[in-house]
Length: 100
Length: 219
Image (cartoon, rainbow over all chains, first blue to last red):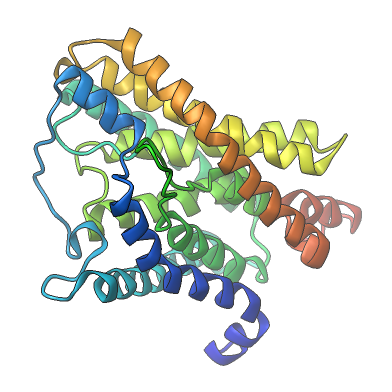
């Protein structure tokens, strides 16, 4: 199956993913505005546990270094979704193997 | 829910790496044994990519304590527990390796919470309850899957020295908060699964499995 057929056959799924990526900068701004923090962070704060990051990642915190945050978030989401798609397709095909 | 580096004692982190590796190995073995239909390969990729994108949407709940969609139940119901686990492994690993979300030392633990506990708990809840009502089944699967995943995070951190071995604090904090926030996970899970059930019911793992059986084991 070529790439074009793949996109056409699953266009709804692609559309949903694209909408989520486009909305992600808005959600990031809104999360910042309300002081988003997860229960794990609350509990760490309460018990005095501190992070000691040893690796920031290639696109740290879903941003692109040097690019303004809303656009950076969008690009990070786009890259992440494409990478996840390719890796999962590859992993699934590798596990599947040639046996039919 | 994503534990960063520095939160876990090394022996805890290592134990979870071993546990997760064993379960992932079993999943790969089971998938190979059962075989995957050609048509399910693209679906697996799209489910993983969709869950990655959905996890980017942090719910902005006023007051601060919040969460985001995790998606173990969606992966489990569409792809089944074994391939669903592998999809979540891809998502959580990419988050750690590319985006620094979740520590490298904590990856084994984060995989155990989100790719194993969440997925398998959700799958068996869905399998059991869907005989009565698929909507209720999807909701409860999303809700309880995420809550137990969070409780595992509470156990791992609570057993560690940085958290003062306060498992009696971390487990209730994680369980109660994610138990409340998990209602949203449950609602999103129902919405996604109902939509697929209505439009492409054939791609759901349980119906796909039933179909293959009724065709008299085509492979």
